[in-house]
Length: 211
Image (cartoon, rainbow, N blue to C red; front, side, top):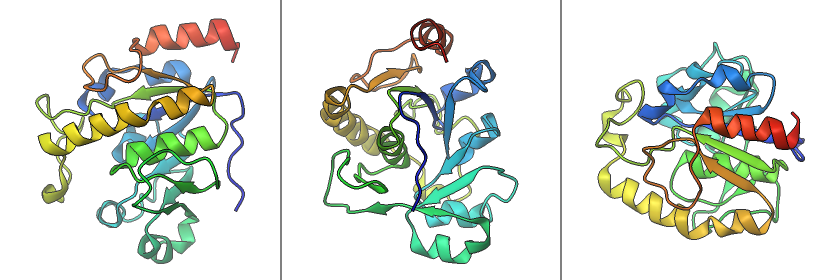
């Protein structure tokens, strides 16, 4: 399978935490790569890729027909059902709980789509990741759009705490590969990555990397 080549580039990874709705993503349109996670594509419809690991999400949104970029999923049932939409399929072994770089298209588990998206962008060669909407907390709301139609799968405080601890633990694997990660959510519970506003992170990027 031919995966994207983002060697040396900046990637904006947009998750669906409430803070994502406040970020002026248009500032980076045409200046950085975009990978959206689930409903976050609505905030950046120009994104090149849309990732969601859950079949029930794709099913609830009928494969997200309006999206114009490429769709990525690891669920074989989804890929088969929406074959006409041209999914890219990733492989996940749940026993591997760290970022993977040994085999393109194979990512670590981590328990959530955000982890997989970060792993993919790193595999594609991106050298700078700007994380948007990675709030990893529910006291300010579950998502920028409210709740998913399948409420039983909404994030819980327990899940968020687990995700944060795990992400903070495996983050050095990105640093070791020379990948800079900036968390653009001031309210994020993640502590592994430095925080900057999206505007400041992009300004720094334009100055250093000349996108």
